Amino acid sequence: MADAEESFLTHLIELRTRLIRALTAILIVFIPMAFYARELYALLAAPLLASLPVGGQMIATDVVGVFLVPMKVALMVSFLVALPVVLYQVWAFVAPGLYAHEKKLAMPLVAASVGLFFVGMAFAYFAFFPMVFGFMSKFAPDGVAWMTDIEKYLSFVMTMFLAFGVTFEVPVVVIVLTKLGIVTVAQLREWRSYVVVGAFVVAAVMTPPDVISQLMMAIPLCLLYELGIVMAAWLVKVPLTHDVVTPDTDLPKA
Image 1 (spheres, rainbow, N blue to C red):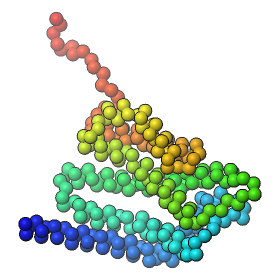
Image 2 (image 1 turned 180 degrees about the horizontal axis):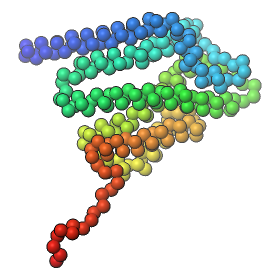
Image 3 (image 1 turned 45 degrees about the vertical axis):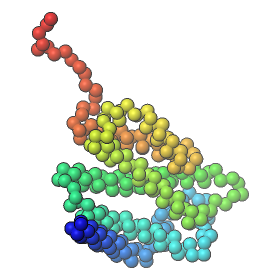
Image 4 (image 1 turned 90 degrees about the vertical axis):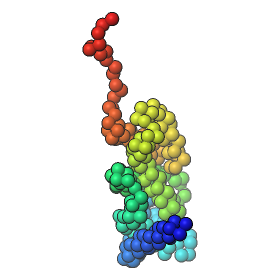
């Protein structure tokens, strides 16, 4: 019991050390980022501002919103910049309990997950936002000033970043499920039609209620699912086409 308690306390102390180091890295990055909070928010709001009519602008309905919202953006950027250090601390805490083959699989998957998440955010910023905001600006009724509160805009952007970031993780999820033996490549191929329906349901729930937004999430999700099947088939050494059964010519004829 004493050894177990000592081991548990040792892990808690190490966990606390790793958390402190990760938070310190974020804080170190946040300090200089805070001085550019206004510029960072302007960059984040650029897709919406570009779609507003001439003279259009955003509003702040909260007294301290003009200060807190840009600081939240600076904190978010600081976390993304410090993410390699944060992930290293997580890896240093978890790695000692993994087998060698698990470490070989975990490292590429973590790197791919981070990269795909950033790709999903970039897709949302450069492709999804301009398309959606441009579409919405054309539907504003005459006499209605389309001015969005900065807090609500940040909430919408964060939700879409998270939604597209998770969507672009589909290949990693497919590969992990295949490598763990939970599903097979053949089952993944059979579930294509269900995945397509599910993709459009998810897109309808997560995106604004217009067809363009739903297509811009559903189509990449389906394509990424197919990419996951291809990668899983390659990793488990399964041919991409169904095997064709041919007669064995070496068997004697009856």
